Length: 606
Ligand SMILES: *[C@@H]1O[C@H](CO)[C@@H](O)[C@H](O)[C@H]1NC(C)=O
Ligand SMILES: *[C@@H]1O[C@H](CO)[C@@H](O)[C@H](O)[C@H]1NC(C)=O
Ligand SMILES: *[C@@H]1O[C@H](CO)[C@@H](O)[C@H](O)[C@H]1NC(C)=O
Ligand SMILES: *[C@@H]1O[C@H](CO)[C@@H](O)[C@H](O)[C@H]1NC(C)=O
Ligand SMILES: *[C@@H]1O[C@H](CO)[C@@H](O)[C@H](O)[C@H]1NC(C)=O
Ligand SMILES: *[C@@H]1O[C@H](CO)[C@@H](O)[C@H](O)[C@H]1NC(C)=O
Ligand SMILES: *[C@@H]1O[C@H](CO)[C@@H](O)[C@H](O)[C@H]1NC(C)=O
Ligand SMILES: *[C@@H]1O[C@H](CO)[C@@H](O)[C@H](O)[C@H]1NC(C)=O
Ligand SMILES: *[C@@H]1O[C@H](CO)[C@@H](O)[C@H](O)[C@H]1NC(C)=O
Image (tube, rainbow, N blue to C red; front, side, top):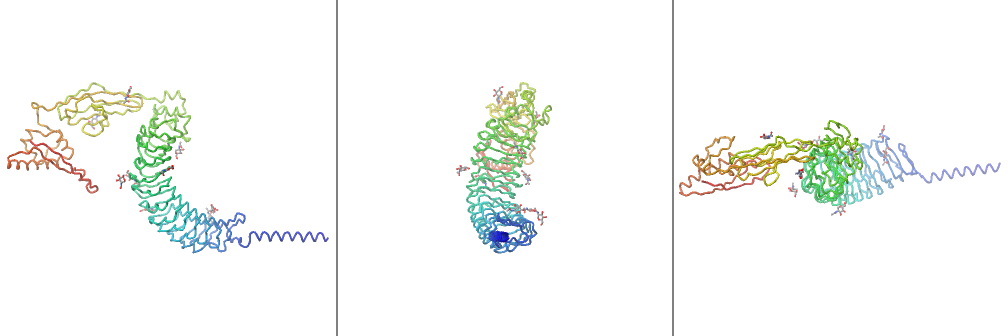
């Protein structure tokens, strides 16, 4: 009996001690506020989704994490959390916060992470973050912040990560980022920002990663990011108006990763990029870029990856990735490419991933290299398909056996059509055309070489038209010679020579020079006698034609009349006249450009 009493007492005693122990460890500080759930072991208090209109009083003092997300808190008062000095994490996202008083977080000297995203903040008062000397992460995204004032973040000397996307920023003050001496990552959303906040960014001495969304710019200005010498990753995206990068816009940067996506670039910004010799990753997706030109990316020595998804690419020229020995990944899915030749790469053997799906590919011999490399290349689960070949229509052509493909992926060498010897003799000043058209598969390119074997361009007096015709206007004796038409495709070439002989005017066969199709001058032409006696030098006329006939002739005739009188009165003739003119095009653009170069030339008089 006594034993049992002793047992009972011991039992009660033990229970009492246990209860006292529990009470001692959690202490009165772990009185959890009614709407919260607390985890004493982890020192976490979660008051989320409790429809709390304000921060609860009597917050547990020892808590390391306080989660107040998804409530209806509207205001944070000064020293709102001064009792929770041990907090490391504070989550106030998804509330209705509109008012943040200065020193709201004073006392949270241990706080590492603060989340204020998805609230209704329009402005952050200077001093709001006072006392947060150890804060490493701050998320103020998805608010309605319009401006960052000077010294807004000046108390956050340890901050490493700042996310401020999805705000309505229209202005970032010059000193806004002063004090952020440890910031490594910044995510900014331009809203309608019309300038890169270069001077504010200049405060961020150790920034390594910068994402800028929705900048309202047409052109990225020179030296936009100049002071950011440690920046490694730059992302510019959703800039619907951004059409170009100034030549020096990325000057001063030493990036390894650059993305400019969902913008309005119509060309690869070769010049702004060329100094980025440490660049490894380049993403220009969702820009209306039409070409990747040959041999213009060669300066990017270490480039490994290029993404240009969802663009308007029509062609990747041969040599596009020439010189890029480390290049191993290309993703150009969702473009308008009809082919991708192995010659675009420095070496196709280095290529490890290739995204080429959703392009209207012509399946011919130009893709044979891909068949050969197929076992070693990752097509990202979406392999290229044929759009044009009848037999291979919409087939994943890489499914075919190699032997089949040798017969299916074929090309036909170019053949120049209607070839007959063309030999033309004309008098000086006439216009001559030579035709050259070719067929083949793929459709060959036709080009013309002059007698000196130089490639003729589509403009100039002697020009190769895009339909294959060579046009020699106002033929000159020195144009005489043998011209060569070359038709070229992936399967080979064909060529055709034509010859031209231009007879010069001689003293016996001189006839008045007329240009067909030119309008009759409404104003009085130069002295008729002089005109018949000695026609204009053809070269002069051509110059006249290029500057604009009327302005030229009115000034010339004025000069002539003037000189006629002058020579009659003086009784002697001056043989040259210098005429200054302002090109018409420059005058008509005069409103926007000041480049009214005055040109001069000398012409001979009778
Ligand atoms: C937010 O809280 C409400 C109740 O206040 C709840 O119905 C809703 O599911 C919560 N949302 C999330 C994302 O937790
Ligand atoms: C706070 O709670 C929400 C919902 O319970 C959760 O999604 C969120 O991650 C929590 N925040 C932190 C910092 O743990
Ligand atoms: C930018 O400005 C336009 C009109 O000027 C407005 O419709 C749009 O909402 C603004 N965007 C932001 C993010 O403020
Ligand atoms: C994009 O650029 C083209 C010209 O390159 C221009 O016509 C178009 O309006 C631009 N789009 C926007 C949204 O500015
Ligand atoms: C930007 O720099 C380039 C290269 O020095 C220069 O040609 C261009 O005129 C500059 N643009 C502006 C707007 O200053
Ligand atoms: C550029 O960055 C690379 C690595 O990202 C580094 O090795 C190199 O020293 C840097 N160059 C300069 C001039 O800072
Ligand atoms: C190319 O990009 C698209 C779209 O992001 C992706 O689905 C595909 O897997 C990528 N291809 C490769 C080979 O990485
Ligand atoms: C090519 O175009 C020019 C003018 O545009 C024309 O004179 C010529 O006849 C054309 N050539 C052919 C082969 O159609
Ligand atoms: C044209 O083909 C011949 C061989 O048929 C080749 O020697 C020559 O280099 C080719 N010319 C061009 C411009 O490709």
